[in-house]
Image (cartoon, rainbow, N blue to C red; front, side, top):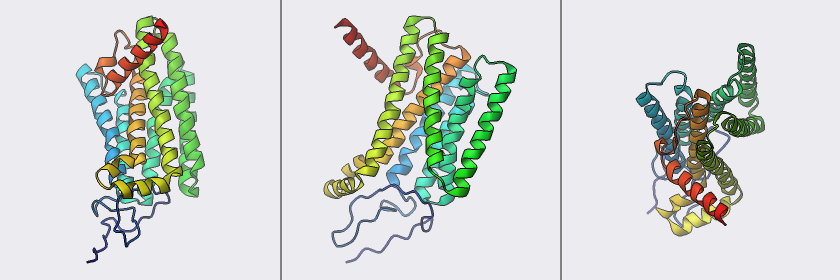
Length: 287
């Protein structure tokens, strides 16, 4: 008995980027990559793994609310939430306009972080100049990307922004945190964030290069183990952790709040990961 074809709730895909999401198709039919779990969600794991960004953003906002220090400091955490919403919307619908919103949100997260670290303790004139330059560059990148369907500029500019945030934040930690104990704690947190970004990017590449093998693996293991091979979902989770770490560190060092070890106040899995890094570094020094 043949299964009736699934009618996508959102209609046919119009995006030009699609990430494989294949589970197990009947042996007499070709595998299909969209709307396998439900007709309302095109890429199930890719959609729901995007919610990790939202959870980290909400956690950060709650921490600020407890300190009664909302306002401009909320912008970056709202950026995390925006990335999650836009990413989920894209993977749920696979529409061109939701793809554009997904990619736009990535720059809406990194640009305010760049602004904060590049204007930290800067003069009013430099602050205005940095704001103008970042606004112009942001506009150019997004207009070129959307008008010309050009992906390389978008990806490379995002990668450059991440690199600048990581290196500049590390430099500010060295300059603004004189206490060696606190400086070490912040660096452990930053190491974990950088590791998650690097691992996430590696996973993203493997998902692209080993697509055929991953599809065969999903067919072989079936549900629910097939979920574990959805590497683009792991990319979401790992970059959400890295993004949250970046937002936290930039917020802490640019507001001068590093008076005590912040590790235990951060969202999971940062505290156990930072403690593990501390123990590994400590063991290495003892040897």
